[in-house]
Amino acid sequence: MRKALIPAAVIAVAWVAAVVAQQQQPTDAQPEQREQDVQDNQTAPAVPQRPGARDRGGEPREATEPPSRSSTAPRRPPADLPVPPMEIGSRLEMFLMRPGRMIIRDTWRLGRIECRPWDNSSPGGEGLLRVHAVVAYVPDHPEERASGLELILQDGYQDHTFLFDLEQLNDLVVALETVRTTAETMRDPPADVGRRAVYNLNGLEIGMPPRRSGGYLAPVGPDEPSVGLNPDNFNEMKRLLVEAQAVLKREAASKP
Image 1 (cartoon, rainbow, N blue to C red):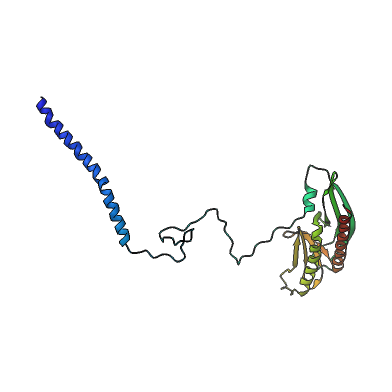
Image 2: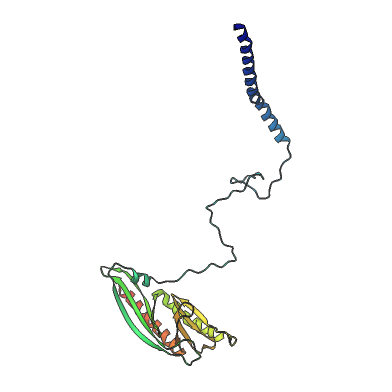
């Protein structure tokens, strides 16, 4: 029985030795393989580099290296696209609309304009425009204040209020003159086209058709009800705006 086990043990030992030799053979060949890879890389032809490809340090980058991309880098619009202007608002409106606090509001009622178009072909209908100068401040902290202009436009449907800061009153005066000048030089449209010179500021639309036959005031928006103004109304509105500027500047100068 012992004699029968000896050949079996010899065979098992030989099989294990063969398996170990096969596992060690790739490891022994690794240095030779690495040396061969280095020689192949040295003799391989150079890959042409893409023009302008450089790494962050300024050295040329291999052509096989993908370009660096940053997911957080902001995208800039093309230079030929205009940047939309920001919406214009007023500090006075934000000051008056802020809830949960006590404020003092001083109002100067400078005048009212009875707006009437010259004829039936002029845009807009009859209405009323009230012009007020406004100063608002916190009672215990008078340095926290805002001042400006309040326009109340009354048409046949409802009242519309528009607020402007003191610094914006000059823009409003310029808007009146710009609309009048543009309408004077604007060409007459075809018979089936309604053409207007339009200027928008703080939600108020100032418009006038060609040849300065009269204009209108309306809230900004499609097909809003509008109040018609004849040229005399425009002149009176400009006069009241200049008066509002004088009142607000005087009040600002009287405060410590």
